[in-house]
Structures are given as C-alpha cells and as structure tokens.
Image 1: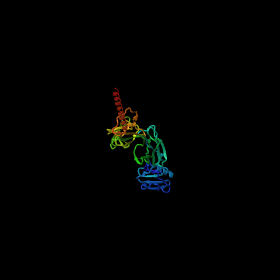
Image 2 (image 1 turned 90 degrees about the vertical axis):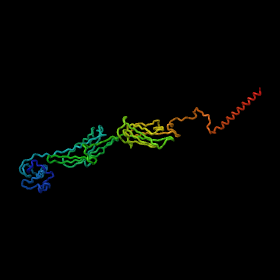
Image 3 (image 1 turned 90 degrees about the horizontal axis):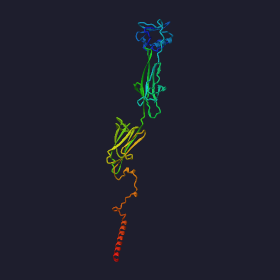
Image 4 (image 1 turned 180 degrees about the horizontal axis):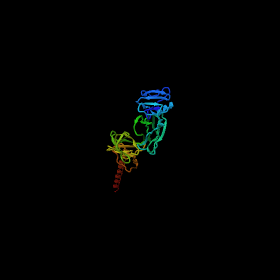
Length: 394
C-alpha cells in the first residue's frame, strides 16, 4: 500500500475501518469530497484524494487498514495529489503506540490554618461509580500524595476526593467534596495523549492550586452570668445599674471587636445595664480568659457580690462551666441588711446592760410601783413612831 504526498502519513482516524466489500463506507463523511476515486486491481485498492484536507486521517488508522486487509504500508512522496497505493515506496519503520499519560491530583491538609504536624488525617479518592481507588493519610507537612492516575485511552473521567471524618470530638472535620474532571485526548501530530483537568468544590468551580481540606480545633469555651438584685425598703427596683465586663488573655485585653453570646467586646471591654432581677448571660467565652465585672451608678447602696463583702467579680473562664457574678445592692431601711445574715446572733440574756427606766405608756409594771410606794410609806410611818417613843421616855 502506498501513500503519496505525506511523509508521516498523519491524519487517518482510528475509527476508520475497511472491509472487502464496501470500502467507501469506512471513510468518514467529512472526507467524502476529498476522495476523488477508488479503484482496485489484483494487488489491492487505490484511493485517490484531492489536494485539500487529504491528510487529516491519522497514521494509527493506517495501521488498522493493514490489520484488516493484510496489506503493507509503503511511503512514497509526491509534490501534488495524494493517494494510497499498494505499489512502490519504502517500508516505514515500526510505529510506537502513544505513551500513557498521568494525572496527579494536588491536595493538602491544614489544622487551624497550619500544617497538622503529627496529627494524621485520612482521605478517600473514589471513581465515578463511588468505588474506592485509594485511601491516603496526610503527612506532617499537610501533603496528601495520591498515586498518579494513568490513562492509555481517550475519554472523560470523573473522581471525588473527600476526608474521612475521625473520632476526635475536639476537631471539626472538613466535609468538603471535591470533584475531579479529567478529559484525555490524542494529539495526532505528535502521537501523544493530552489532558485537561478541572475541579469542583461542593459543585462549584474551583481554581485553587490544590484541593485544601481545612480542619479546625473546637475551641474550649465557657460562660459568664451577671445578675442584679436590690434589697432594703429604700432600694428602687426600677433603677438601672451599669456593668462593665473586662476580658483578658495572658494578662492583656484582646484587640478589636468580637461578640460573645450577643455581647460585643471592644478591645476586651463590654458594658450593659441591668435592673432588679435582670441578668445577662455571656456564652462562648474562650476557656482560660480571665474576667473582671464592675458595677457603677450605685451611689448610696451597699454592694455585695456572690453573698460576700466583695464589690467586684473576678475569675477565670473554664471549659464547659458557667461562672456567676451575682450583684446585690442594699439601701438602708427596715429590711435586714444581707451582710448581717452572716453575723452571729446575740442572746439578750447575755447582755450586761439593764434598763431600769419604765417605758412611757407601759402599764405592765404598775403593781410593782404601787408595792414600792406602800412599802416606802410603811417604812416612813415606822420611823416616825419610833422617834415619838424616844421623846416620851426622856
């Protein structure tokens, strides 16, 4: 078989097939106008092409022709025209099949924005039928090194990459689903495959240089409840008192503005007002933070905190715990001062002070006074009688 006007015999598509009864039907329709004639002699068929678009058929297809017909391919070259002819030319050298092409999926892992170090996380690579292709752990520097995917045929392929959630309750595992779409094509001019790889992140186009799985550590948090009561019959229950809460971390207040449980702290300080029997709960406070709670607008009141003599509340936020800062303001009146509740009671029998004066309007001791009066009178009468007897005896 002889090919004229193309040294490399480029272009005959692999899907071109020949049979001994109908040769033209095996030629793609797009080449129909390029085929000038098809003749046959005792040595084989001769296909004559026009000058235009002659060698859009690839060499791999030529090899298919030889396998189907038992013919050989012989290269000859001409300045014009193009045909495949069984006569003349030189035998071409052996044609190497295209080398397989590989696709590497770049992926990495972070924990709190950094490489995970000794913490290993597991990732799954699955094909479009949800079959596991590979299971891989991240390295200390966060790299997830799946083995390259190898392709030796053209086509479209799809894979998914996900993280296998672990059992550490202190870590939030990334639930992202990455889709990897791969198209493999063939370059006829170089006898090589080419690839096109695109990514989707949870169904949306993703253009990052790697598939990034970002795990975070669940922050250990606690809460603080600030409550307000007033006592004493001169205390007003409608008055609002101002509270200032200061947070500190390692002895310093955090910078910027951040909200915990609906309370906004600016540079670590938040203020709010509370009335009698009102409270404020501040949730999500990082464990280890220290707090200081102060009250103002309380002139004329005696302030106690958590039933102690303290006038401020301080402490450290503990994970999973709720700290309490209960403020009570007392204003003098008939109501018992709550501070007196902790004082020992005095037994009136132990008193060394005796009151001898009668209470005004108190009639309970009238008999006593009458008895004293009678006794005094009798004593005076006796004294007078004795004096008269002494005078007579003289």
